[in-house]
Image 1 (cartoon, helix red, strand yellow):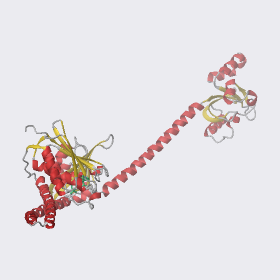
Image 2 (cartoon, protein in one colour):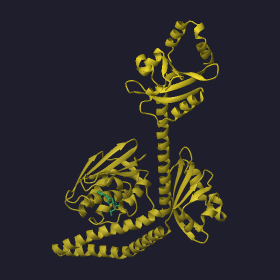
Image 3 (cartoon, helix red, strand yellow):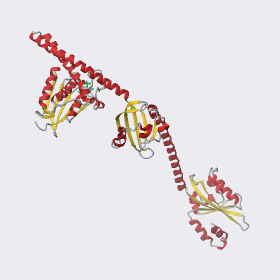
Image 4 (cartoon, protein in one colour):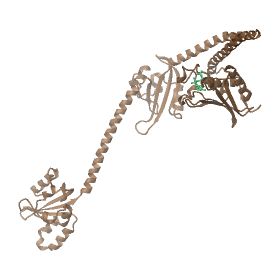
Length: 510
Ligand code: ADP
């Protein structure tokens, strides 16, 4: 710039045309204002300035540069320029200007004073550059940054709210909750845990679970759950544990554990939910004890009733008293059903304690199924059972127990079929297994109950009041089939009938 100014002061010695051509060839807009005249008019502008502003020379020469500012007079950078002009100094500023067509453009302006020999400013040279594209891009970037900041702020707020929400839930739920790190150090414990196990939170946080309270949590089963089972079975639910705790005594707990494998802050955390099921377990044991005792007590009188009914039936038949004979026979069937129920109830407790003996022998499934059909048809006359599939297939089994399974499946099919009484039995063999399926057209079973119906005393909610039963039959059947190294399952949909199937290994020798 300095060199350029020197060149200007020496104009009389240089080739004017050459300089004018050089200025016109420049892509920057150049103007010269005269400061010796009022309102500092523009006395020169090059072609680039015309292109830049859209004005032509005749609109420019003689005007003060402020015509480029339109009505926009409040920019900070204008003050900076005014100050530089007042002091006769060099200045660089970015200002918003307007083209002739009214369109805004960003002008990167550089002004430099030209002084005479006494140091008085005679002219100003202004060099302009349209940097609209760059500024707009920068503004856009800034706007995006602001939007991003806003999003981050919103996210942080949401996260903080979620954290507060989660901790409110954690503190409200009835279960005790612990968060552990990968070395089983306690990171947090909810109120319930602290209250139930009598441990203030400040004595827990930072301590290793197995070391707190003189090792009261140093329970081998719990160690196994956290160190051996959980890493391979994550999450682990329904782990039952009974332990003698100091002060609160013997407790049965249900543990659910989850290893969190999230990235970032919550990496490698273990969430341990502990539910006290001591009371529920005690009630269950009492219920089972009661059923056990009651069934035992009923068995003897029932055997005597059964014997006497058979005797009375024979006497009535001998005397030709058909009404009595029919009555005694009907009573006998009811007693048989009652006897089976009692037998099942006793079975439940025997199976739980593993006291059931199985007598395995080669069993012909056809004979077994035919006999079972006969028994169920005597009990429920009019019922139609259609048998299909392979005949004379031998399995390794306990005849009595397998017959118990068949009769159970048949009586359920009858019971849960209401008016429709056609039952299909299909026998097939595959890969060393014999498969038996019992299909009915009855009320069917909801998907959510498919697994649970094999639990002890479980009955589908919607049927409990409409159909008699105690919910042990399928549990017993399942235990029997498991003992035969087979599986029992159901395929069903509510309202569309059910098919109960089981598989058992085919006999190796007969
Ligand atoms: P119970 O019949 O005495 O309730 P079970 O153990 O035999 O006991 O059956 C458990 C539950 O399974 C029943 O309560 C019923 O909800 C369902 N269930 C069993 N068999 C059938 C079937 N054939 N059709 C529909 N539901 C069935």
